[in-house]
Image (cartoon, rainbow, N blue to C red; front, side):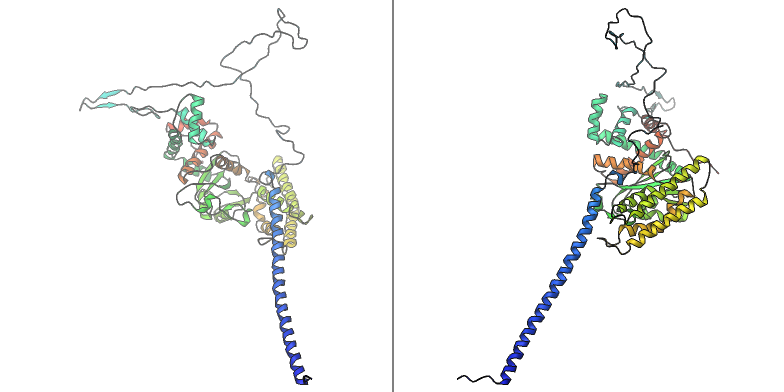
Length: 509
């Protein structure tokens, strides 16, 4: 018979089993902790992915209304009632008159009109141009010096070169307009000119036409004159846009890897080359500047150094550095409205309706200013202004309070960020209600920004900052000259002859 285990052996065995069980429990607890941590991490990733998905879906829903002025729901497309339109007007003194053949049959019953009595005639005009090639040869007289016998030949007139053949201002103008405004590459521009004008030119000459015009403008002091004229203006608008420049050693951002300014709605920032637009609200003067980057020092250097008036800008903080010498900064309310509209789409439900209230308040304020201007007033009724601003303050405070702790995939909720911005920059948002000379948007500058955007969309890039600067100078010259009644061809002709149009100098105090 086997010997039964004693009490000590039983206790030892139970203790061993208990220790093993405790080890198993501890291992399971550790495993559970790991699984719980992984589950929490997975839930956090899922939450962030859901937020990110919501943001991407919001961006996919965005259309041209997010980047352009919002169209009222009751506003029809096309010209609005009362708009004068731009239809062709009848020329009272046509260069040529011709008679058409009489009608053969009645337009009503179809009866023949042979031998019918004459009725009141109608008229039709055709406006066209005659494209003919002309060659002008200048005889350059020579005179022999009675003292030393040296023969001296007269110099060639502007645009011509002694002993050589050159193209005239009309062909130079066609090359500049095609490449600068038509956004046509030089090779294709040369081909189009050959087809349309019957003159075969080379792609190299087309490119040199722009370089020649830019050089003449630089020699005539166009940049300095434009800077002086803009500095004397009471109000200017500014905007900027990124561009692609294939320059040696260009930063990586030029290929599209841009940074973002969180206070500027995700607009391209820093390292990429940019075009800065400085424009008068009435668009009389337009100045485009080529910048190596959108860094604050580059942008502020692009604003005329002697300008001390009011500057209308978007939300980019670089312009705030100019406040010590400016009369004030007006934040573009159209940019504010776009940011508010984007926040209203975030939800949930009507929680972000406060941003829609801000839009309504700003539009009411603009309407009040327009009505006051029409009455000849120079200021808003203080009580009316106080009520509008109180509503604005309450809406912004609501946005801050109700979005302060709301989760977002990359930091603060856009509603919280916008609400804080509206509070911090409220005096600049409302400047137009105190200074009636200041427009409430920077739309004039934003319209000029479309030029480099369209050129880049068609041509893709500029080769160097020098060619970008050349393009900007020519666009500035032709845009401003056109707004002073000078056609592009006449402006180019004047510049090539050494007498370019220059902006009027400011009057002396």
